Length: 145
Image 1 (cartoon, one colour):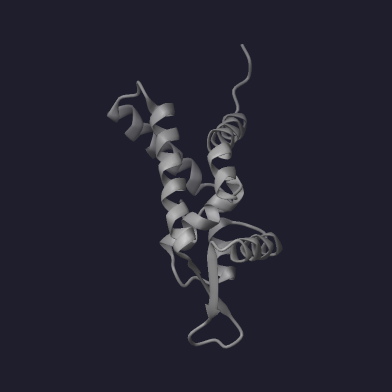
Image 2 (cartoon, helix red, strand yellow):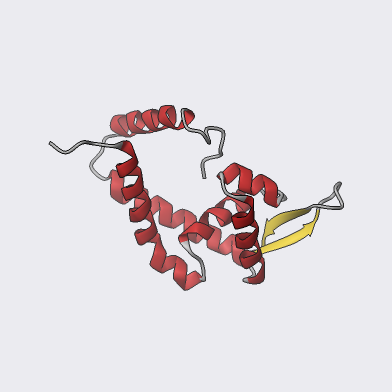
């Protein structure tokens, strides 16, 4: 019997989500990685780039480059921070808000496909166990998207 490892399943699920969402997101001018930025900023309007990188558990440099792409592509707008003149805050534009719903719908469809045939009780148990495991992780205070 082959050894089972949680990390292998997580990697597989990550690749499955990327494949499932990839084509639809490319049509919108996005990558799967940028989808999570859209989801976060839409749900947290007025967040700072530093908050976004911390909450998503990402390297600040990577986050700033990604944010710049999203600003240049018209998904985000940057505004001066209301109380800190050195900082900026992020908002989704109309284009970003529209694509938020595309992203959310893609993830819901993936969930439905993967959880088909699983009872509500099994789903509850699955999510309970995943939350328990997530709390043990290094990035255990990161907001789930």
